[in-house]
Image 1 (cartoon, helix red, strand yellow):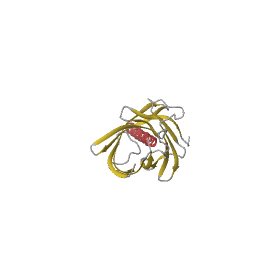
Image 2 (cartoon, rainbow, N blue to C red):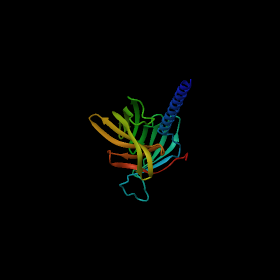
Image 3 (cartoon, rainbow, N blue to C red):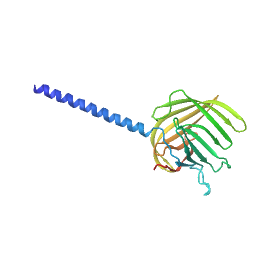
Image 4 (tube, rainbow, N blue to C red):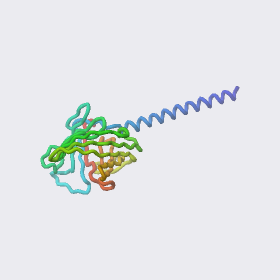
Length: 219
C-alpha cells in the first residue's frame, strides 16, 4: 500500500511538472510573438537616418527624415524629408496589414505597387521564415511604365547592434530583388522597440544608412 502511494505521488509530481513546463513554454512563445508583431504607428512618429560615413551640414543634419502624417484603418502615410529632394513633396503610403509601401512619390518618381504573396506574409517576424513576393509596380518618371519582379525576405537572426541612435535588439532580414536576369541584395535590421528599421546595408556589409534619432508619439 505504501509503495502504491509513493508511485501515485511520483506520477502526480510528474504531471504537475509537465503542466508547469508546458505553461512556461507557452508564455515564452507568447512573449516572442508579441515582440515581433507588425508595428503600430501613430501620427507624429518620426525617424531620422544618416549615412554614418558622411559629414552633414548643420542646416541639413540628416540623410532622410520619416514622419507619420496620417493614418487610416488600412494604411499609414509618411512624409519623407530629404535635403536633396529639390522641393518635391516626397511621401509613401504603407499598408498596415503587410508593412509594405503601396504607393508614393520620391523625387520625380511616383509609383503604385501590388503584391502577390507566394509563401505567406513576413509578419510576425520569426527567425527562419522566408517570404517570396511577386511585385507589380506601375511608376512614372516621364511616362507610366509597369514592371514585375520577385522579392525575397529571409529572417536569419536576432541580436543587439550599435547604431548612431544607440544599442537595440534587432532582427536581421536578408532581402533580395530579382528582375529579369539581374538581382540586388541588401540587409534590413528591424527593431521592435523603435518600430522601424534601424540599419540598412546596401550592398550587404556596407552601411547605407542607419538610425540617428527617433521619437514615438505614444512614449
